[in-house]
Length: 193
Image (cartoon, rainbow, N blue to C red):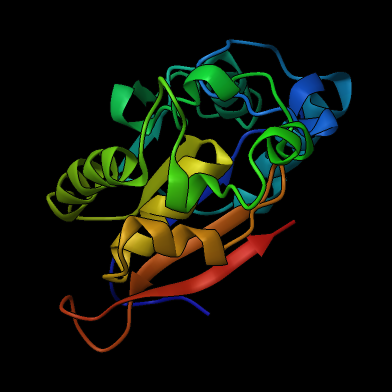
């Protein structure tokens, strides 16, 4: 289902060793696995025939390599605001390990010691949204799961913590857009593999 209004395609990066094992990967710059590279190439097939006014990528190796393998590397502009959540002391640690030391912890509610809070990530998402609204046409974004979840929440007017209600698989595609006019932002499709 296409729209008469601009659409924002969100591509989560392909699999990495840490995403496969459940480790929080914020600013650690690790490569895609062979499976992640294959999935990134598949993103190209799923985007075939679509045109984009702009292509933006997180500067992380995993996001930009997904972008490049999907065929958009030469057009992409790296934007620091698209980086994944800074997990601080929880970088490289699994949720299960964190919960063993801090029962009930939730990144969207509690943030990360020495890293970012949901409000911090939300402020970056708001800056990205302001940039998106200035583009007259479709935009393709390559980034990471938690950041994209906050971006989706902010797009539809939820607080950054609302990102907790959206799940994203590696190499998935989601689409943000509008319903009746540009004052009605919606999520048009979510977490398509």
